[in-house]
Image 1 (cartoon, one colour):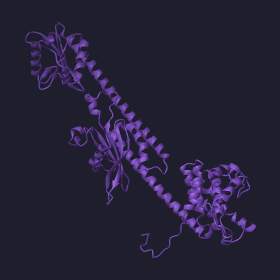
Image 2 (cartoon, rainbow, N blue to C red; image 1 turned 120 degrees about the vertical axis):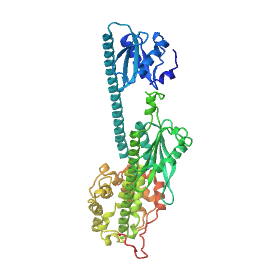
Image 3 (spheres, rainbow, N blue to C red; image 1 turned 60 degrees about the vertical axis):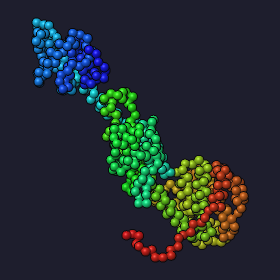
Image 4 (cartoon, rainbow, N blue to C red; image 1 turned 45 degrees about the vertical axis):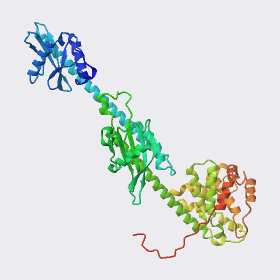
Length: 536
């Protein structure tokens, strides 16, 4: 009897082959394996022995099908021909799966049955061991997935800790997607942006970030998002497996599995994370039944996708909030600066120009974006201590007396006193306090020298001096740009840090553009009653 592998596999897969091999190995004699479909049938295992003879197979099949409920233990029975047959019921996963039969010729039937019982004990023991091995493997795989997810979340947290306020949602996704796909293992992982209509309702935008070894084209990803995004509830992703067997197959060519989660904060939808098609496991052949059942997005992948979408949305919201706080802080500082400038029309705009010069100098010196922003804010506040200087001294049209100059020299300490109690503003104190120190140690208030002077103070000293020299005063006109630059050159290494002066000279064209394009801010004038109470 010969048959194809396909026919063989139709008889309960590989289990019957294993049982057949084990029972023959144990007894050292040929067996026929029987599998029940509508009736008991001999499994086509290419048996080339007398057991495959038609009369034998027919007789055993008749006996098996006449039994109704088979005994749970091995049994000897006699055919009409007088042949004695041993039937061994073999269980798989706790249920009767096969019956193994063979012809026996013995005058000690009890020994044959004892041998059959011994085989079943060994078989069941091996079955239990295999079940334990399988459970251990599943447990190990789950632990591995859990550890990978923990590692991903930790790495995500560390990566987002170094993100600054200039980072947008799409740049954050470029950081996230490669890390996320180490756990999800999709062929394509995408961030799709959200656009909004005039009513604020979300619409599918463009694919702004992609990662994976074999992603579907962007338009397919957009189609997926359009089909399913309305089904996505905050925190609950949509998962579809075996898409090729659904009505959406024609619309989504090349898509077998998908998962989608909404990137949404409390106010609006920011976009969607979309995973398309699982990568083939390297250790599993795709055509096996086990692999087919495992090759899909499950709760683990869906949960991780939703968590990642929430992290992305929360971080984007935090950055937006920090930007708003930063904008509020700068506007409050500008209002304070306007209050200072209002005391002296001749110095109006000085603080903001110094801030802009200082920011550009810091960039030229290679400072980070955060440091440049700090220098800008410090520049706005560098003269805040002049609030404590009398108007008579600030507005004096002539040169100051020694006593008046001593009063002016108190403004760095006055500024420090104003800002020191503001915990969130302490990072501006070095520049506010030390922008009048000299590189040779002859400045004020602490007579610091060289690099003892904080860099913020050294940068703002150059910016402050340049603006002071080139701005009009009650007792003189602003000097020519060329003369101011010459004074900076001459004071290199004595009054000013050589690095800062060299940076000034390297970017002087940009600094002059700042000076020429600067437009003085003027306070708004109220022209009508406030109207509605803003506190209600």
